[in-house]
Image (tube, one colour):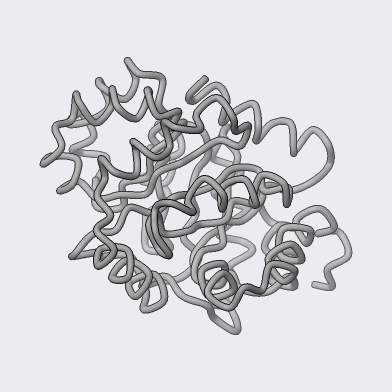
Amino acid sequence: MGKEKLSQALDNVLANGEKIFVPYIMAGDGGLDILNERIQFFEDAGATALELGIPFSDPVADGPTIQEAGIRSLRAGTTLKGVLDELKKNKNGRKIPIVLMTYMNPIFVYGTKEFAEDCEQAGVDGIIIPDLPIEEEELVTGELSSHHIALIRLAALTSSKERIREIAKRTEGFLYAVTVTGITGARNSYREGIGTYLQEIKRLSAAPVLAGFGVSTPEQVCELSHYCDGVVVGSKIIELLQNNEYDAIRKLIDAAKRYETATL
């Protein structure tokens, strides 16, 4: 379980000649009572893993769509403990790996040891912490490791080659390659040279490399997947969920399985 479950799920998709697709949703957006139902939808739709955002009052990486989802979730009374308690209810009933995306402040308030223990009890397989630099990782790495939870690192467009090499060496599960400078949110195009950037990160990383931030169409899923191992899609998924456009979500996920049809 834990990090091994996540790595196995990623490897199985790649071994099948497909690309990895990780959707992001905000926990508690629409109420915690539908969380396990939504997780089941993504499992049935063929997502490789699910990134689950924890609402936070002061996010630094989230764009307007995810911020608004976080506000809705906080207004509904969502807490980190509440999310973990809800995940625990269906721990043995789901197959899809769960990756939490949260910030350091909620982890500190919760207590690092208690957080890691409860994540393991809830069946969480990985953690993404955008505001945790590698220089301060020892604040959480010991507890996460002892509870078999992957710490997924992020690489930025502004990171030096040496820093990316260090991040790639440390990452667990996958390496999250941020494809824009700035916050999350759907975009119509990417900066020139994004393919070269992703290929360079992939060359440096033994773990799968996933492109994230700004991915919003099946065409973008296909295009970016040519350069790395798959994608993470957040803002667009939240928007489609809000509008009950489940077929459009399935098309995004399916695009990772037919990425070779993209025209570059």
